[in-house]
Image 1 (cartoon, rainbow, N blue to C red):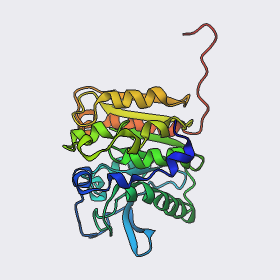
Image 2 (image 1 turned 120 degrees about the vertical axis):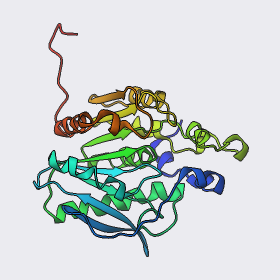
Image 3 (image 1 turned 45 degrees about the vertical axis):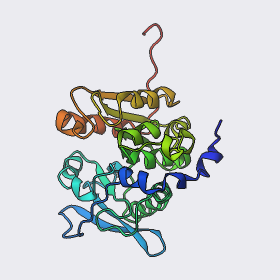
Length: 280
């Protein structure tokens, strides 16, 4: 059985081969361009001479809750330019970060860099919030591939944020690689060298919101069910979205998507409600 120490020392280089990386990552380069109104663009150093881009959609109130979002493998921070204002209007700051090789970020995406970079990204953004006097609670959110980063932080930095949101996240690595067209067996890959998301969420006790499409064709719903089942948090919630696939949850749910997240971040830090005696 893997311990927390074993997980943090996990060597992900077995995944850093072209047959995996060409499917796992879909980097899209974009110019930084003009920063949208109400936003702040940052370049976050993850390694000497290597920075990744971040776009922060900031709510007006300094005490507003903050969500750090690690996006999906085919997205960039610019893809959230239409989404960010919805969060801002609800009094939530959305902090979206790219991976190496995405948007205006430097470097090349690899499995190793994906996991390693989430720590300096997290630290630099917390430093920004503190310097800007933004004292609201912080949630970490991972969508699809971004669930790897979110759950890495949940396992090893849970004391530094108040809640976890997983959207379309993966429990097992090898079945997802197969869905992407990779043959793990031919490459000698097993779940033991995967990202270990199930092991990581088993260590997380703070509030958790899991959102997953019932018709997800890439990461089936049973991934979400297993993540929810093994998570020890008392305040954990699974929202299943009927009629939606991997990439259209927001389109299918509309305003409800934002309301569910608003309610979740509004509850962060509060003790779970106890049932009254005799009530089931």
